[in-house]
Length: 359
Image (cartoon, rainbow, N blue to C red; front, side, top):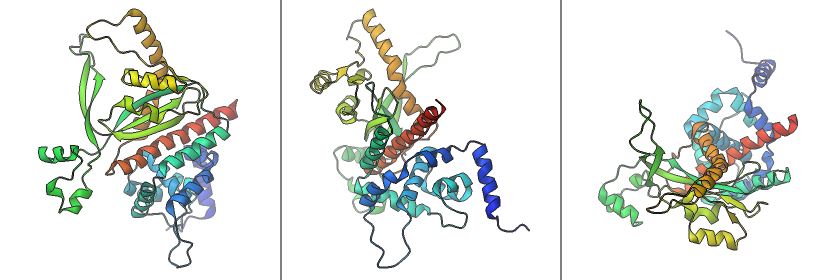
């Protein structure tokens, strides 16, 4: 029987991981993790330890676990198992083989403290300030869009749905706190439209396919120069995209242009952009009862080439990061989606730093 792995055994495994191009090694080395310590300490409000008991886990270590969850779409139980199982995860967290790994309950409690403190916006701002200090200023204007983030579907009666829409707790749930905890009264249904695929003859009978979806929306604005998410907000899936324009735009961007799809074009938004010094390059809507002019169609095509960059961000979050809201309530959804937005920026920062080093 082989004995316990020694120091050199672990070092050899680390070396092989590095040779294979472990992406977490670069993430751990390049990201200035200490910038998160102050906002985390402010949110957690931990005691000084004079009363004894087991010391709490390091807040930056716990925050890095949330980053792992965001990057790989892990639940709390999956995160606990994967950290125990994967040497790359342990190295990223700075844990040795003999050190205690935070369990699923500890991870949940840590994230819940961030929810209660409303800390996600501050954490995001701290890293954005760090990006600016590193030379990645928000430049070139802003591209805005929104995407639906799925959540577990709720099986409610018509009466329960009506009560939820009125902002009330359904009568049947009022004496059942355990049931209320499992019911998401903030998520909503919406309809997404996707392009129909051509049939075998290369023809389609419908231009768009309506797909019902339940959950939340991630509204985001990226800067055109570097592609970082600079502003974001979270709403129910039924929320109107155009109403979030002023909430996601970054006033620090050195460019004045704003690109977005036609859902953001309204007299109210155009007036707001003009008052605040922005230049609208938002898609024009098709006139009612009339075909779109050729000039407008060409202009929208030009805008689409730029606007596609923000769609790539959402595609990355869903396809590679497995974005899905498993939690209950919009407060927790904000932390979940906010962590994915922040983790996307962390990964993109590492990519930019790699290009800078190679130049």
